[in-house]
Amino acid sequence: MERTQARHEALDLDESDLLRMYRAMLLARRVDERSWILNRQGKAAFVISCQGQEAAQVGAAYNMRPGYDYVYPYYRDAAITLFLGQSARDQFLSLLGKKEDPNSGGRQMPGHFSSRKLNIVTASAPVGVQYPQAVGSALAFKMRGEDGVVLVSGGEGSTSQGDWHEAMNFAGLHDLPVIFLVQNNAYAISIPEKLEVAGSIASRAAGYGFPGHAVDGNDVLAVYETAKEAFERARRGEGPTLIEARTYRLTAHSSDDDDRRYREREEIEEWRQKDPILRFEKYLAEVEVLDEEKREEIDAEIKAEVAEASDYAESAPYADPEEVLERVYAEV
Ligand SMILES: Cc1ncc(C[n+]2csc(CCOP(=O)(O)OP(=O)(O)O)c2C)c(N)n1
Ligand SMILES: [Mg+2]
Image (spheres, rainbow, N blue to C red):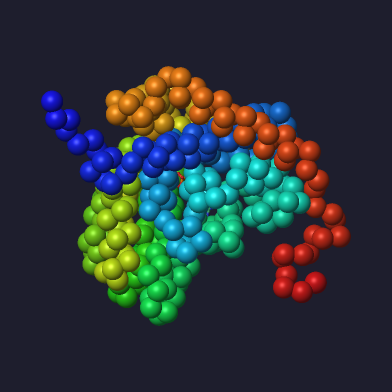
């Protein structure tokens, strides 16, 4: 009997693509889980998580050409930056504020990802500032006649900032090659979506003259498909796209937040049933790309990589006090 075409085949993805996506999602999850342990052990001062948002991040980033396209990530985008080529070691060096931290040499809070080689541009801490900057990079691509694309990412709360609207307007006005990835995880710290977002985020794009799509952010293939169309459109010079990936933050806002004060445990449990990694594993089993033995093998490899990276970062030195002003001012 002829088999119907699998979803990934319709998207021109093969088994190795699926496993690359899966590994990136799982690595991000395991790094994140380890980060919380380091926090509880008193070794990491502050953790901000990507747990629950891995599909939205990897599905979008899978369309990027690392080191050519640009990304302006936000603090939860560990799965994007790991997928693009930052390592588990890089993440822990940053988490523990060590000298070798590639993001800032131990100066910035965790979650401020940066890599000149990978075109990952660091964000500053005020919510939403990445959007106008990203649009500026997209304008540069356009002015140079290059086909680079800029991915800029943030939470649904950030779409209430003026910066987001100014950036959306400018991108629409000049048909810029930029993709706005809004990871709608239902909360901005303790504030639920219905108290922070007027109307629908995806439909706002129409007001700025370009397409907006709402997509199941816990389905990596659905996000990939929507983002693929957006990247192709941008490369053809047809302008921006807004993607609202509907998802859920599985941890508290950060290690300094007590989420028992504003959301029910049952709600989190419901979303755990829709965990993007478990969902993808189910799909991979259905299309016979992953069986239990292979899943355990991949998980063991990733856990070993994470343990090694975490140990390495723990024993790595802090920056020398004399270097404190370096990489802060152009000249000391
Ligand atoms: C301009 C500004 N206001 C407030 C804050 C404090 N703050 C940090 S993260 C955050 C919530 C943002 O929510 P959202 O954009 O939905 O992202 P999420 O954390 O849910 O992924 C707030 C209010 C800030 N950093 N900058
Ligand atoms: Mg949010």
